[in-house]
Amino acid sequence: MNEKKKKVECEDMVKVVCPDCAAEFDIPDDVMVGEIVSCPDCGLDLEVENVEGSTVEIQKIAIEKEDWGE
Ligand SMILES: [Zn+2]
Picture 1 (cartoon, rainbow, N blue to C red):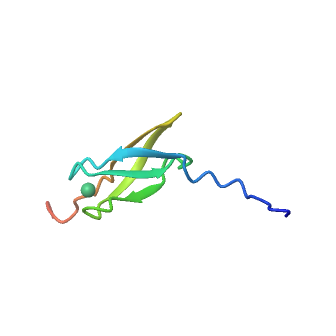
Picture 2: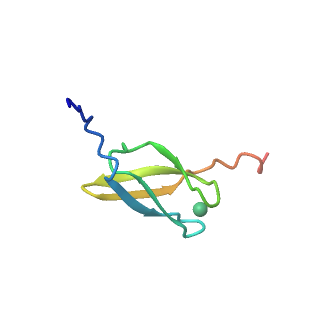
């Protein structure tokens, strides 16, 4: 049998914590800084702020509040 295995390292996940609802979820460790991930719990969009080895920092996307101070 010639079983070609693609090198899909789907086990390389890192755990991140949603800064809003504190839910823990896994994202692939090959995310790039600036990528947007969504919290599976509250649906908040989070931006990858820093990737260092197996540590990924995420933060809320800053939403410009332009609906006040007109
Ligand atoms: Zn959340």
